[in-house]
Length: 123
Image 1 (spheres, rainbow, N blue to C red):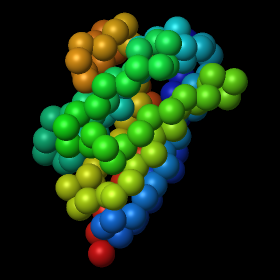
Image 2 (cartoon, helix red, strand yellow; image 1 turned 90 degrees about the horizontal axis):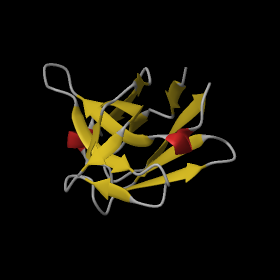
Image 3 (cartoon, rainbow, N blue to C red; image 1 turned 60 degrees about the vertical axis):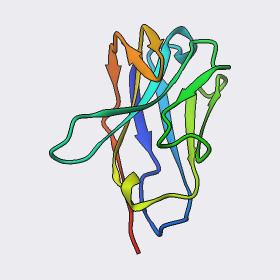
């Protein structure tokens, strides 16, 4: 059973940067399509990017394109989400997930979720 653990969330000022991690155990990330989502209280969980199992193709939502970069370290079985030029509207709980395939930026057939990590962008 794949387990995902996110870390790296913090309070950061607008324009700042954070790097989130998603560490996998009990399975291999490269066997799955993976995605990152974020959720604000009272709103639906929003998919912001999806990565093919190969790890070499990532599709980004327009809201984060050019500011967020996904990378994967297969040796560490970990994904990293580099978030630059953060804006207050990026404030949310961020989740990584593993599933069946990417439907554009949306991960489809999600089987596994991490517990989430809080990102707050505020001055």
